[in-house]
Image 1 (cartoon, rainbow, N blue to C red):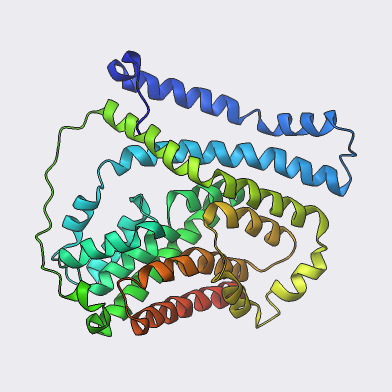
Image 2: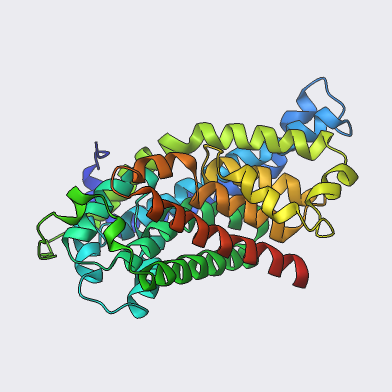
Length: 345
């Protein structure tokens, strides 16, 4: 369902966007003093572990939700340009290499997640999109999305957010290209391989700015409405780690000196059922306690890009050998990312 827009929104969409941005910025500036005031109003010592955990939770929760709401709203407007039909049309008929780059880049701005994996995969196959290009998109879309980048920006700043985006795109592009070179179309399920090919077509419709604003509201309702429980749980876990877990303890098995920390992080991350909203607050707390950046990035990437639920969904269209190849290639890329960044940072 799409949020209704008043006549003022429809007639003066630019004025609405300006006022909304001013109000959002004004509220954002109040978050830190409001969190401190909340803790001060409670019968808790601010310097205690509990006081620190509460301040962490009271500050990060509205900050993350506000950042997520703002970015998802903007991305919802942008996503009106990238429907599934248009995405298929953009990728169909492209040569591999350039198409892998294009597919991974489209994954950033398209509102698709692991739950969309099967219908998207079928649509790409029908449109004649090469298998490796399809995988570049399927890796990038859940891993390098607006939720992940917004949370990383809000918690670590733009440098780490851009770093993660570059890493995620690199893994998606290279993994898709490698899978394409292996020529594994025979390991699609027979019913998928035998489906008739359809031309990928897209016709532009007259969408106004007011319609795109409506799409932004719809995206907030759909995405933020779905992930806010993960955010609360993730921030609560992160607050506990931040205040109660000794720094030396965390550094002992997730620090850069422990060579086995990166594969262990990947092994732990794959079976977890979470997304960026739930895992990034935990990543923030792990880094604050001495965990190495490469290790926590590997953990985060494995949770988002190699989640067990997505593998179960993809089993409907892929044979076991192709799924195993997909997991092996992506996991290798994530391991390399973890080791490289532990070595240089």
